[in-house]
Length: 109
Length: 113
Image 1 (cartoon, chains in turn cyan, purple):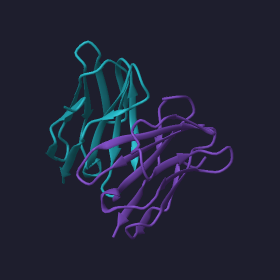
Image 2 (cartoon, chains in turn blue, green):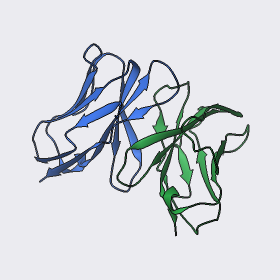
Image 3 (cartoon, helix red, strand yellow):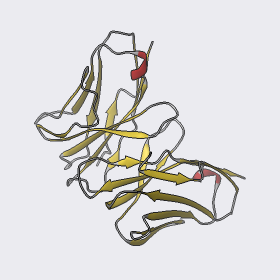
Image 4 (spheres, chains in turn yellow, brown):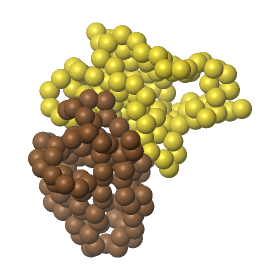
């Protein structure tokens, strides 16, 4: 069983659509990260959250610690947003990060 | 301030050879993490190092794999006697404080032939 589950696994959207990617986790955490990975490319850290909500440009990330759930929203999606979005959590104990398997987003012009 | 630098970007090794992957953290970062991404799988934690110390290597295979982060120079992930199953993308990340927001390198894609 994976400690971090993401949904959906794959997502195709039309340019301009509002997009939501979900992440649920089963362990107590001290922080949650949203990462972006382009095909064949490196990984970019988008957000680190421990509570509440953060916004950066068209990206919004929220977390509900009690429900063990986080969402990543993209407003006014653009083809350049096409990438894999990965949720990662840092448990309260230990040094590990647990990663979701990612959501592959394709935004069509 | 350059980001996290990994080299080489691509590495091809024959079975049985050694692979050395290098990671230079961001300036001022003394915490380094290595992750492996197998084809069609998610990222998996391998090892967490601080300068000259291995803090947590619980994600690293017990044999053939080793990591170091010397006082001077980059962090090195070393894989001895590589096998086909070692083919993967290996990512390094660094942070200024333990488990602070980490910055990732571009990864090294290892192919074992």
